[in-house]
Amino acid sequence: MNLTTTVWQRLSTRRQVPPAIGPVILTQNRVYILPTSGGLIFGATLVVMLLGCVNYNLGLGYVLTFLLAGVAVVALLHTFRNLAHLRVLPGRAQPVFAGDTAVFPVLLDNPSRQARYAVAVSVADDLIARGLEATHAAWVDIAPGQQATALLRLHAAHRGRLALPRLRVASVFPLGLFRAWAYVHLDAHCIVYPRPEGGEVPLPPPRSGKDDGLQSAHGTDDFAGLRNYHAGDSLRHIAWKAVARNQPLMTKQFDGLSTGQVRLSWNDTPAHLRPEARIARMARWVVDASRAGVPFAMELPGAGFASARGAAHEARCLTALALLRIRG
Image 1: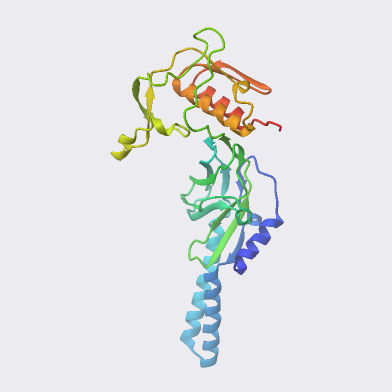
Image 2: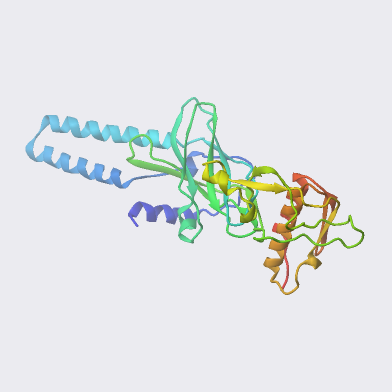
């Protein structure tokens, strides 16, 4: 760990601010700037050159030394101006299943007439040191008076609400001699659905009447076509022949499901399973019933959803499962 990295982390722990709901403007007092390792080497080289010029009385050496020093000062100003007065706004993150990668859009608005180049958005260094899994920084160029979107990817390990951590907006433009950065904490989150249970999990049987439920007719399903693969689909239903022909991952659909309404109840899950396993079973039922296109109701401890169908109803039920808190 070098000196500049240590200073960044010291400065990052000095200013802990709550998440900002609206846009964050990178004013002068929010932007830090320090020389990079290359900048320190460049400065040391200038000192050696100056000593040589003094020792040997080199007139042209003085010109070259002070010319390079002037270039460094100009680079310092441009590096700072590359971040100053940028507006940072949170975007809307789409829900994902546990184990997938959540994508957080971060909007960078440039209100000035000056283009901004090579602006990096990443998770703060001190959070990475604490073990938060994230991909590399997202780099964007922002035209004058325009917006650019940096896509920050985080690993969604567990179901629930994944909050966007504190971010670092940085730049070493134009020469890489100095690094300017600012810390931003935006009020944004992503809903992480529970990972559906794998394998063949039949839906609950009808409670009364022959058309009150939905069951799989194993062995008598008729092939109905292909659709795009969704997380949690059974590996047995993947069209492997299509994959072998370098086609996108597809899932086979069958018409062996009886029509009617389904009621998915927490009490129908096996009581001997752990709470997280029961939630995964409920998520499997919700996904299967939604993919089959039939209306279904859902009953959870302390919550219930009337019978409906469609992507919006599926999202509501999966969100309830993602935020469900079970004691014991």
